[in-house]
Length: 144
Ligand code: DQA
Image (tube, rainbow, N blue to C red):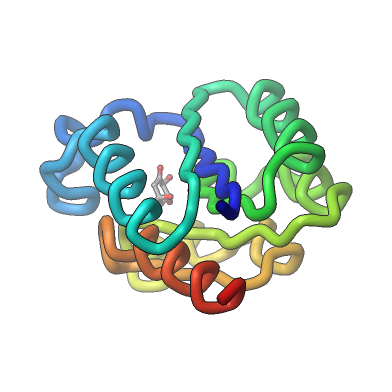
């Protein structure tokens, strides 16, 4: 089984209640269960994690670097300004895929900047839950 750690940043614990026009109706627990099911279908062990704290996310990325095969990360608003998160991703050797529920390039201009993207394998944004699913599918195909 390929180990995929899904890492969720600030405010994503409020999925289902928060700005539903952008982030949908699904809760984070529902999203994670769905990803774990899909993952199993595709030979991936999906381990979800969420934190509202930058330092905890950095610790998680470091740990993933020693325990996981891939990271799928939605850094929330940290996407747009956290050089510390970017450096953490750059410090590990496993590939990271950046995902977003909403279409970050079609919203406020500050959201179209990602300081994370340059250290990631790729970025998938704008497809809700499917953004994560596409990332998992890509990993499954890549590791076939
Ligand atoms: C988000 C987009 C970010 O701009 C925002 O701050 C979030 C969620 C998304 O998944 O669309 O918290 O990463």
